[in-house]
Amino acid sequence: MDRNMKILVVDDFSTMRRIIKNLLKELGFTNIEEADDGQTALPLLKQGNFDFLVTDWNMPGMTGIDLLRNVRADPGLASLPVLMVTAEAKREQIVLAAQEGVNGYIVKPFNGATLKEKIDKIFERVES
Amino acid sequence: MSESDEQDFQPLVDRDKRLADARALVAAIENEDDAGEARLIGELTAAYSGTIFDEVGRMTREVHDTLRSFAEDERLGSLTQDEMPDARDRLHYVITLTEQAATRTLSITEEATPMAEKIVDRSTRLKDELAKVAASEADNSRLGSVVESMTRYLEATTGSGERLKGQLTEIMMAQEFQDLSGQLLMRVIDLLEQLEEKLVGLLQITAPVRGSKADSAKVESAEDGVGPQLPNAGENVVKNQDDVDDLLASLGF
View (cartoon, each protein chain N blue to C red):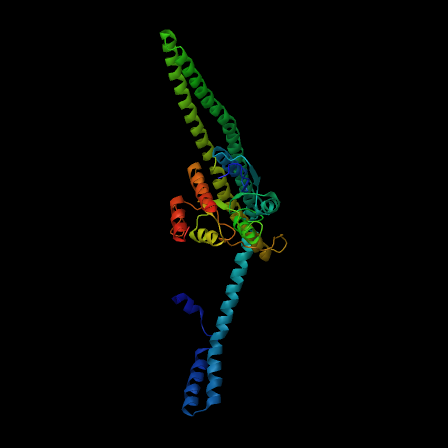
């Protein structure tokens, strides 16, 4: 896994963006950008050569699930690995995210170890 | 229907007329006089339906009076005009306060973490350098004992620095509460807004002078997100990350 890969963290709460960013830094990732909802994230993704997307679900503007759909529908982004980190914990939502092509799903509250485990798993699969 | 309700449904027509109509009805049936039968049934029931209309009228007046007194209740006016917006503002303020506290804590942990990392790095490096000195001065026993106590000290420092780093991460993770509590509060604020709209709408119907926003009740949808679930939220909600992983595994993840 390339520790220099470009990561976009999308969450409407700045506290959570900072937490995820700091955790990623601890894991050795330094090339991290932020967006506060799907609407601001999508144009960044389209022009930004991102390697990995970490997104919340419940956000104003465009939700994480819609962002995921837009990413999968865009030929240039379709294969971008997407990890959801969200407080949305209904079974139907997790199933929906899986159907829409999410690569990993973490429910808040979470911890650094879980984040590391899911990222490792995602990139193990992507690289194999 | 209670007994008193039945008493309210007194027919409008007197007893003699009803008896006469009833006898005429029996006669009409016996004589196979269909037209007469229909007319007499109509007359008999009309005596009662008049009462029903009166009753509906009375109920309508009651509803109207209740609604009017509801609208004239000053408490309701102050509830929609002052207290509910106040409650909303207070909740917004709670969100602001928790956000400020979380941001402050995050800034401090972000500042402190590199210091802890530096302590770990420097003490590790110093220990290595000391080991080299000790190796080249192996025959100097006085230096040897100093090196040994310094090495023990540096090892302890490294350990403390590592623990400090871990604890700072824990403090940082604890700030997650701001996101979760913020989301929950936003939902309560949303509910207050809907309730306020409904009350204002009701006031507008009964006292049209007051202003009202358009009625747009929001329904929670899984699509838009329903926010953090409370503990013991039921079967439809995963309880922890293990549940999520199990569910995804069952879907072939």
